[in-house]
Length: 215
Image (tube, rainbow, N blue to C red; front, top):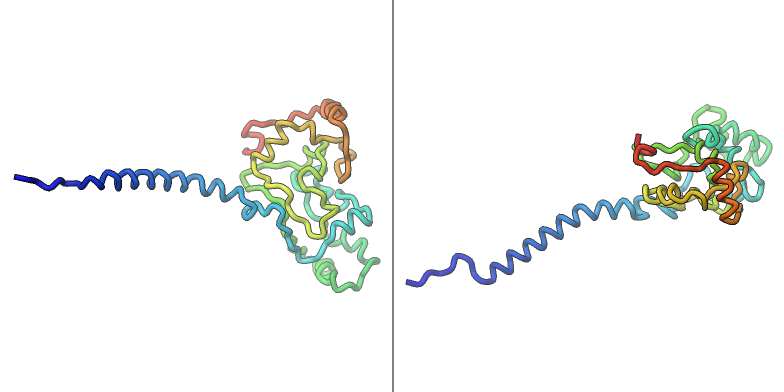
């Protein structure tokens, strides 16, 4: 008496295809989000951030010589660089272009006390601790993280600010240091030997353990 086999020979092929597809699907489910969060679409790297008021860093920093710390003074003494109060803006613009339509929102903010809703350009996840002041104190220049803002009409992130990017600098800080009084100099250049000397004088030894940034 002949019996039909419960499974046809081709069913083995189907089974292996199903196993391979399941394995690839599981790997994709894990890898895809990890790849996605590192794409410029998420990090906004090289993507200009439009602001409620047109602020051309080329004009203010490069042409007029306004130092970074004039507007972002908190970077020297606090975790956050901050943005200037509108009164700081009006300190100049009460005399310069006081009636410009481009400054309508600035004048309104100054007189009614409501801050301008600036859009953040560079940001880190909430679970990451970052202190601007220690980086400035240890001679890390603004340009190292924010790029040549003196050449930007509209500021954009120049780096991904991913953990691997930060660790690259922490593991080799010497090539990034400079004298603390030159941190806002966008064109500073120095040979590696001089940077080594500066790093030694400032006792630059950034941590690389998890607790340094994840507290």
